[in-house]
Amino acid sequence: MGRNLEIGSQAPDFEAETYGAEKVRLSDFYSKGPVVLYFYPRDNTTGCVMEACSLRDAEQELMSLGVQILGVSTDGVKSHEKFRDKFSLNFPLLSDKKREIVDLYGARWRFLPFVARRVTFLIEKGGRIAYIWNKVNLSSHAEEILSKVEELGL
Image (cartoon, helix red, strand yellow):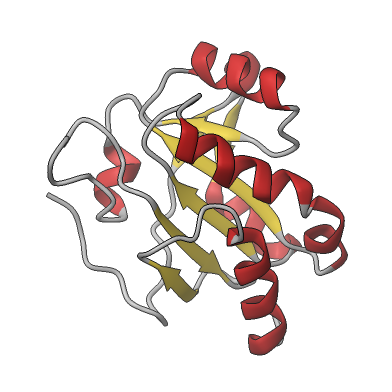
């Protein structure tokens, strides 16, 4: 039920649906700079709101470093659109209803296998995994990401 990806591994490419039936391919972001690919369990739940808002609030600092954010959960596009609008999220949320991306990244939650567990991958330009957060501090995740991007010189 999923892979064990490590730092230095090539990030598995995928295509997913986002708002308005737009398709997003992970590899399309590789040339633009580092990508934060974060998995979260459910839209509009307390922890997921804290994490998403932490990332939203750090948009300027992240953008200044060229960092792009992509959120992934097993919720549908309509749920993502409501979540985005309710909390003014400024990055794409990708729908993985079939749990294909969750499985590619080994991000299926063991206790509730139909949802994603909370894990974040920092992917460097070119597509290699630079860092993995298996334990996420919900309120300060953006600061952790900024610190790691600067530390690694991405």
